[in-house]
Structures are given as C-alpha cells and as structure tokens.
Image 1 (cartoon, rainbow, N blue to C red):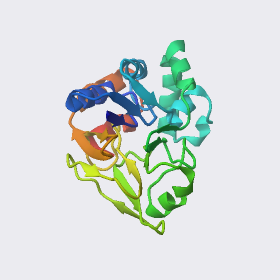
Image 2 (image 1 turned 45 degrees about the horizontal axis):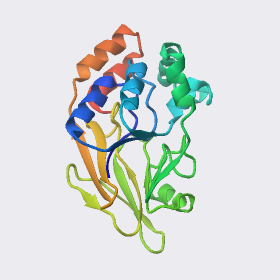
Image 3 (image 1 turned 90 degrees about the horizontal axis):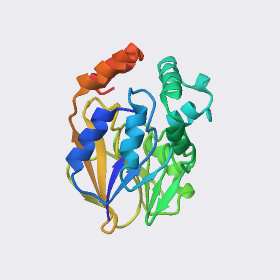
Image 4 (image 1 turned 120 degrees about the vertical axis):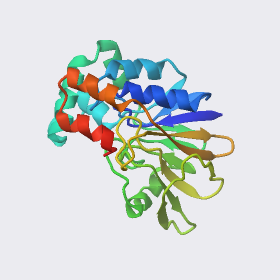
Length: 241
C-alpha cells in the first residue's frame, strides 16, 4: 500500500492542497495530528482530510481546541489561535477531532503525534529522547510529528540511537532495525524551509520518501489577517520558522 503521511497541517488549506496535488496517487492518507491550530481554515482542512480514506490521530493543538489540554500551557500566539479555532469549528468537526485515538498501529508502523511514550505532547528533538521511547512501541517503525522538522532516528542492535537528515525525494528503505521518522509539517515548517513537508510510504517495501512542495504562502497569510490571527504566526510562514 502507498500511504501519504502528513502532520501539523495547522488549518493551512493552501499548503494541504499543494501536498495532495504533488503526491498525485496514494491509497490512504495518514495524519499525525495537529490538523487545526495556528491557521485560518480548520473546517476546510478537516473536510478535505475526511474526503480520503485516512488514519488520523490528534495533536496537542487539536486537544487544546477541544479543552482536553489547558490553553495556559500554550504560548500567547498559540493560545489566541486556539481560542479563535474553538469558536470557528462546527459541532461535527469538533466531534471528529474528539473521537480520534491517541495512537494507532498499521502493520509494521506506529503513528503518534509527539512520541510513542507521550503521544500528544513530547518533542523528539534529540537522539537521546528518541532512545528513551524505543520500549513504547512494538513495531519496526514509528512515525511522529509535533516538532515540524523532518528527521530520522535509527537504533542499532544495542538500542543506541543516531539522528539523520532526510534527503528530499530519495526513497529510503528500512527493512531492518527500529526507526522513528518525522515527515515535518505541512502547514508551518520550522526548519528554515517554507515549503510544505510530507512523506510517501510504501508499506510493503517499508520505503519512506520525504517531499517538499511550495504553496501560495501569501494566500494563507491574507486569510489569517482577515481573521485577525496573531501577526507573528502570519509572518513566520514565509520564513519557514
């Protein structure tokens, strides 16, 4: 099966559409959480996601909007955007987010937003933290989001973990060992590259391909201004940070 893996869409419909157009054909859409938050079109992003065969899990912003996390734990801009999103979401879309399971398994792959240990809100930024998470998933591969930065963590036979950058549009086959991969963010990349980031996965070959695609950032920014979302959230999109 060919799966399109996205994470941290953050209500950025323009970026999500660009990813879907660039990916062309796939059998199933896997979403690693934070469908909403930050961006101006939460309802549209949920509807577009639901129009495909998909496996989805929630992220910390999804839970913040639902009231499952205290918004005082978010920074001021994220809190303001989540309060706006809370008012913007319809009952049906809110119910969709509320019913998502925290973690999923699909064959040899586990899906989590933050980490397999703390699915909603743990940042896997370092190899040392990734190593601590190895006992918390039973599959060969774990896919995570949350940091908005694409990366591969690979463990050796002694569970020593190293971090590796992923080469764009170069499929990586991981038939042995245990690994944690992050496809980066669709709607708010934070690695200095403003292009939307996503991954294509062949579940039979265990092949993983990182992809980036440009999208009309200015259109998203204009819609954010129309909704009076925080200025910092608007400007950071063009910087990829």
